[in-house]
Length: 240
Image (cartoon, rainbow, N blue to C red; front, side, top):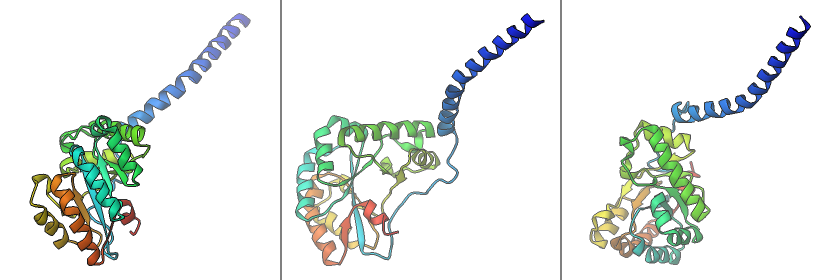
């Protein structure tokens, strides 16, 4: 009888040790499943503009190409004392680390534009999370800046995109003025397109193109003449 008691006690001790080893593993696995498959309780919607009560505007540049135009673009912004928001893809950041670091060193705000520029609405939430994770890790590793904002490629922001961004701690940023500069318009047309549509709290979408570099001094001069202060998305949202 006493021998059976000791056998049971040894068995209980082994079970206790096994439980102590397995419990942290099971807990970590459960947290991973929660992050991947459970939607946030409240998913913020995309941001199209800032406060209409302030004469501030945000200039944003989505970057997955156009690195040849970035030096001139950065010089123009520096000459006018303007800091903008640059949304970088992870793959571009890895391919052009010096350019990415130059943007960060100039004091511009850096967000993510995803990693490989896919169509986000065609991806599952888990796939979107992986895209964002890869891009944010690359940007942080190379520039030292941790993205807090996400400009989805093609402006696609369906439920899976919004949920993935929320789970990654990112705010989804859209725009209220689209320069359509990727179509390579005449610089005068591009400048007029932006200035004519200027409004309080506007978020302007641009890219590092040659027409953008040529039009940017005119855009900045005219916006300031109208009393607008161009800056980053972060400074715009701080006014909310």
